[in-house]
Length: 341
Image (cartoon, rainbow, N blue to C red; front, top):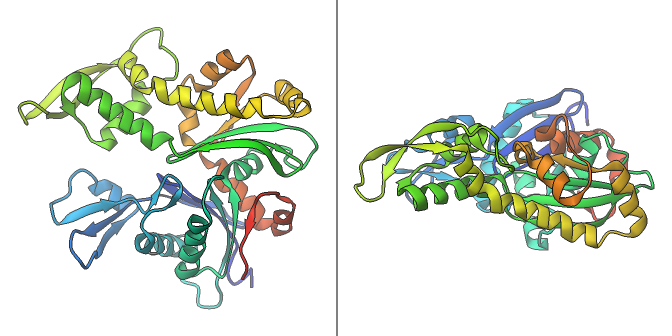
C-alpha cells in the first residue's frame, strides 16, 4: 500500500504547510491561506501561493481565511479543502489507496483540537494519521540523538506557536508552549507603526519589515527603509521612513517571551539533564527562529550556547518525514498521540 500511496510528513503550520513525501523529500511549501467569497456560499477562489498574491488587494466580495491559527484548526471546512488541494499537488491524484501521514501539532492542545486535525485529514483523503509534538519532530529533523539518555533542549518558533521542550530517550521531560510566534511578531510591528507614526500597514508589509530590518538585538549601524501605508488621520496614502532600531523596539517584547519560555522550562528540568544542556546547548528551529540576533540574545541572557539549525524552516517537516519513513519509531515517543485507523 505504501508504494501505491506514499507516506507523508506534514508540518501543518499557521503561516505555511510543508509536506514531505517518503523517498522524495520536501515536495511542497505553501502558505496556509484561502481566499473565499464573502457570502453564504463561501466559494473558494484561491489557495496557497495564488491566494497570497491576492492578499491586501481584494475586492469587498472576497475575504482571506487562515484555516490554521496558533497551530490548531480554526476553520474546519477550509482546512479540509486546503489539505486536499495540497495533497493533490504533492502526490497527484491517487485512485488506488489512501496515504498515511505524520502531522506535527503544538504540545498544549485540547482533545477536541486534536480530533479536529484527525477528522480534517481523514476527510481530505488520508487513511491514517499519527500526530506528534512539533518540538519532537523538530528534534528529529535537526538530527539530534532523540533516543539517547541525554538532554536536548529544542526551541521551535513557527508562525503561530513557540514550542520549548527538553527531550531525552524519546520523551518530552519538560516543556512549554505559547500560541504566539512569527505572525504575532508581524502584528506587533503593525501596532507599533500605527501607534507611533499614525500609519496603517498590511501584514505582508510588516513581515517584509521583520525580514529586512528585524533583530532581537540592537544593530550597531541602524538601517532605514521607506514604508508606505494609509495615514490614519487623513485617510490618504502616506510614506514614512522606518529604522531598524524602531523594528527592534517593536519586536523586543516578543523576543523576551521566548526567553521567558526557556527560563520556565529550565527551572523545571532535572539536574542531570540540565548538565547535558549546559554541555550541548540550545537548538533553535522554525522559520521565526532565524530572526537575526535571536541566538545571541538568548545565549547572553541564559549563559548557554545557542545554535540555529541549518534547515531551521524545514526541521519539523523533515522530522515528520523521517518518522513517516520509520513508522516503527512512533511507538517510542512518549506523549505522542497515535490515532486509530
